[in-house]
Length: 99
Length: 84
Length: 154
Image 1 (cartoon, rainbow over the protein chains, first blue to last red):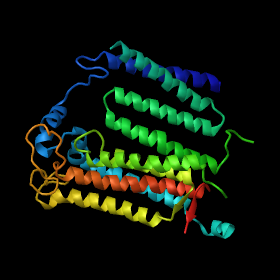
Image 2: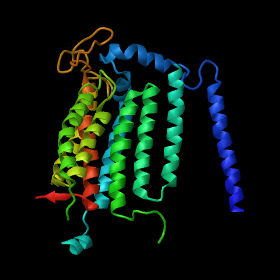
Image 3: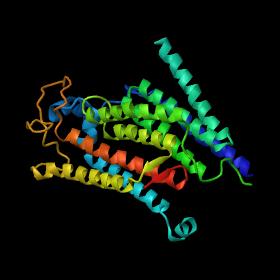
Image 4: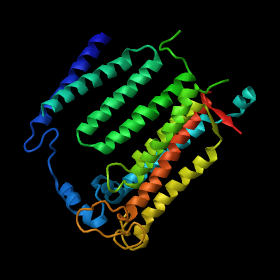
C-alpha cells in the first residue's frame, strides 16, 4: 500500500515538473532562456550606470537598489556562524573528559 | 553552435550521473567528493548560461568549502552509511 | 596525533595559497567593474583557508581575531547603509557616487575600467568581503578543530 502511494506521488510530481518545463518553453515572447522584459529590468539596465558609475549591474542591484536584502543575507551568515560556534564550543563535561 | 549543444548534453549527462552517484555510494567520503564534482559541473553550466558571478560562487562554495566541511563532519562520525 | 600531510602537499599548498588569495582580493576590489563581488571573493579567499587547514593540520589560535573581523564587517556594512540616510536620502542610497571623494570619480556612460568610481558600492564590497572571509574561515576552523584534524598552536 505504501509503495503504491509513493509511485502515485512520484507520477503526479514528475507530471507537474515536466508540464512546467514544456510550458516554460512555449511562452509568448519569452520562454526558457529568454525571459519576458519588464519595466524594472529596463530601468536598471538603462540607469544603473548613470546613477552609480558602475559597470556591473548585478552589483548595483545587490548593493544599491536591493540593499536591504543584502543586509539580511549578511545577518543570516552572521547568525549561522553564531550557531556553529554555539553548537561546537567546549562544554563543561567535555572539558573534564578531554583535559 | 553545434559545439554548444554537444557541451550542454554532456553537462546534463555528467550532472545527472554524479547526482546519482551521490545516492549510490555507501562510502560517505566518496559521496561527498561526488557532490563536489556535481557542484563543479553545475558551475560550468552557470558559466555557459552567462552568469559568471554565480559560477564563481558555486565553484568556491560548492566544490571547495562544502566538501571540506562534509569531510570534517564525516571524520567525527561513521564513515559508512547505515546502521550497524 | 599527527595530522599533517606529506611535504609535497604542504609545499604545493604554501605556493598555491598566494594566487588564490590574490585572485580573491582582485574579485573583491573589482566587484563593481567585472563579475564578482564581496561574497564571491570572500568565498575564494576562505577556500585558501580550507587548503591550509587540510594540508598543515595546525594553525595559530586566531578565533578571536576572526570573530572581531566578522562583527566589524557587519557593523561597517550597516553604517555604510546609513550614510545615504544621513546625507538626506533613503537607506542604501548611493550618495557618494560622483562626489569626488574616495571611490567618487565621475564617468559618463560606459565605465572603461576606472576603479576609482562607484561611491559606496566598492566600500560595501570590501566590507562584505571581510565579513564573508571571517565567517567561512571561522566555520571551517571550528569544524576542523572539533573533528580532531586541526592542532591549535599556542
